[in-house]
Image 1 (cartoon, rainbow, N blue to C red):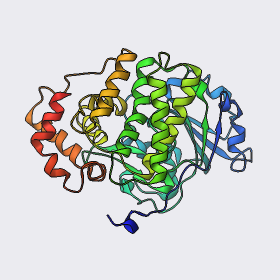
Image 2 (image 1 turned 90 degrees about the vertical axis):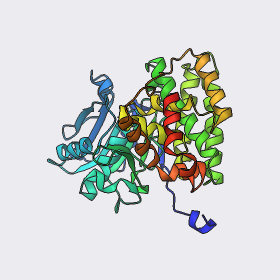
Image 3 (image 1 turned 180 degrees about the horizontal axis):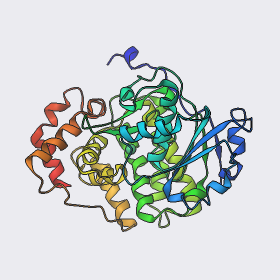
Image 4 (image 1 turned 135 degrees about the vertical axis):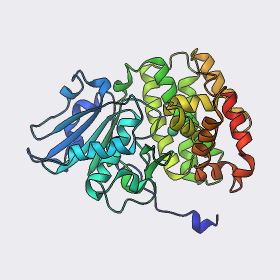
Length: 363
Ligand SMILES: [Fe+2]
């Protein structure tokens, strides 16, 4: 692409409250947006926190709504439409808060856009299709790695179109964030590793891509440095490493907001669509067989897996029906932007049906 074609407006998160215990000072994040007692705030909280202990730390008012989000499956366009339909009755929503991992944060971002723009979630899947700003939105990550807190997308599965795609828009970016590393203290080790690796993979893909610029590169380099510090250390869950990973995730998400991912995410999206594999586990399954595309990173990834004795699932695509391989191929190859970023506009000549199936069989 020409230099002028590559130029586009870019938005990043405006303000954030960072530090251990920040979530207990939530009223600071609402200030200026939610000042009246009857201003309604919607809190979408990962159902992992459904015992209510986390909610009790929030400045809740009678007008507010708390919904616990079931994240067993990744968000679908249908689930988001239902969520928004449930939120519409009652007072106008002044702010929407997502507290959780990538799925919960993405649900909050999508709901925010739909509450002001109307229509259905699927209408806005793509690039720059959201006409106006959503409801004021605040993100509180309780898992580090997806970069959903920083990115300009919210990924949803669209079963009708066999496609996993986000609302890629400046309007999808959170207005404010609470980055509280204490919230990740209880994350199980495996989940911490898989999710954290998402940011490592984002940066590897971004730095190996064709659509690059200095801002994305700077974010990626720094996020990679922090990820290595975390995942090559013996104690990846130390307070210092949890803070490092939270910042790495934020920087990694900022990087892909300004460039694109590469080969790993399209294959991982294929796994999600066809076999319902979760995003971060799927990425790791794919990263484990990326020797042809990212040889040094694949080797480094395996070293990190070894340091923490993480079990990467294997064999899930070894013996599938022809129909399933065809579906995996279609759900992968549809991601033209990241694949062209990684392999050039002629990526279909490299990723033929046979090659794609060969890669899936390795997983
Ligand atoms: Fe990702």
